[in-house]
Image (tube, rainbow, N blue to C red):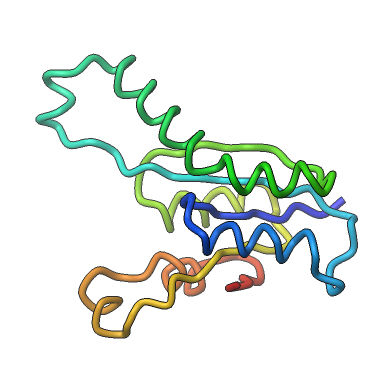
Length: 139
């Protein structure tokens, strides 16, 4: 069985990527979707005033919210899936996880930001495309 990573941020673009996995005639059902979400880590100033357990609980809550709609789409279509939460630099965490599980593909909903905004902020999908150990599908 193949592993497909669905990177989600809770946006309508992530939901579109989940619907693509459910509806696409290009894909067989011989895969398990690993729904992943990555929250940025909080700064040292925050960590010095808030307990680690509270920060971990907040990260867990935010990841759950971000994955919920994609998981609902996959569940409604009886697509086998697992959920994984990460904290840190999103592109690196997703690429590292893809390597770890031997992913067959990474699926990402693209936000279609302007080239100027991507140059200033950087593009998560662009960084994943540049370093992924497997094919990346932008939806």
